[in-house]
Image 1 (cartoon, rainbow, N blue to C red):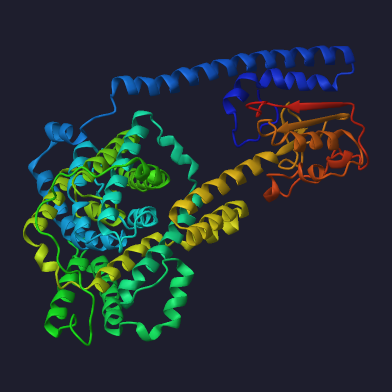
Image 2 (spheres, one colour):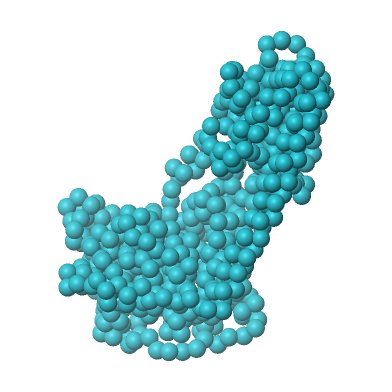
Length: 615
């Protein structure tokens, strides 16, 4: 029950129920009648052991029946499919909401056109596929999503993951048709994977991706994204796509850099930055579409000055097919599916984590509820249906979602309007992209990745928790060196290893009695607490299993054997309590009861209230 619990309130419910019995049992330790002391303590232990065993059995039964039954019930009844937008439109939609959604949809559509072209290049696809990813998936999500503000479609991090998944199978330059087909198969598999997660209610597995892993991964991804777009910015090809070889080749072949392309791309970054600052200061309600403005200006300047001709030779987007996306089933083979399995898991989890994070942020800010499992259904359907119409994997976009909220979007009707804008562009305006320089699209990507860079979190982790910083660093380095797929696996693996290592050396606290009360507290946190003469009370703050049994045994021996000098003995009194100054008073047989000498311990009492399991 409540033995030795600190005032932070851990296991507070159990403490309230059993505190009187436990304190009474401990109070008997000071009694002179040895037989009474042993009898009462034995009864208390037996009562707690039996009640805990029955409670654990009932908890296991409830978990099995609830969780497993819930999964089977969802499979059998398929109640996970809902249409939140239709319900909201039918019950509470007004003309003012329609006006707000139309404004938001058109504004986001204008932003999505240049972003889609840029992110498709990041995925090593023809630019038109970025517009395909910004049309049909938006329609699917609009009907199924529970977020009022989410704007799905192409996203930089997902585009990079797609390229790194498919490029090792089919080179995008040597076999473009096979590459495009493999990307569409990947999109289909991602959709099926996410729908399967929704049916089995497995969104919880994303908890294995800790904040440290994701932060290190996204910062490394920013480097990978910038490296992949460097060839468009400087107008030269690189023989290797890895980070270090790419920059080494750039430094050793500076004479091959297309100066005009580099200057135009750099000026594009400056223009985007300047207009964004202008929007922040003066145009908050209706921002200037800086990316579309850049595309128009750069295209006009290129045509006017002939930058696409000799001697400038800037690389252009070229022909962009005109027309709406058509239905086409990708060509699927066993070997291709097997090759894409690991990438499917990585892209699916990344897409969901990015999206659900934004969904929850905006739902909390604007005070409405969302359904995490329904979001999986919406994303899965968007990717699955989109793959049949030429769309590569999609996720939520932070910049476009923030824009929806900023201009007053009210419901997912704005997604329908955005998709409509993209479809109009596909039908009428694709020919205008012919003279668009690729270096300008690269500058749009460079500005987008600044949202992925957050070194402040790494500094905070270094200050607060060195193990968490080690996880961040491992995730960062493995992603930079090995790419997104392997980097994610290594990051998660290292995070789990650190968690196991922490569990192998749990906090073991020495408890003492507070003067004038029946309460027993950690003497490291409560210096006024005094140990009971002849008795050492230890609280184990973790479950006991094969990973920590040796460490716990050393702690127990050090508490009762004078002169013991082990790693555990030197650590257990202060483990987890470093900020409070630790506790060395009862280690190696020395007490904190005022005697100043060795304590003779005749009884070792274990407070196992925090031990949830013992294998």
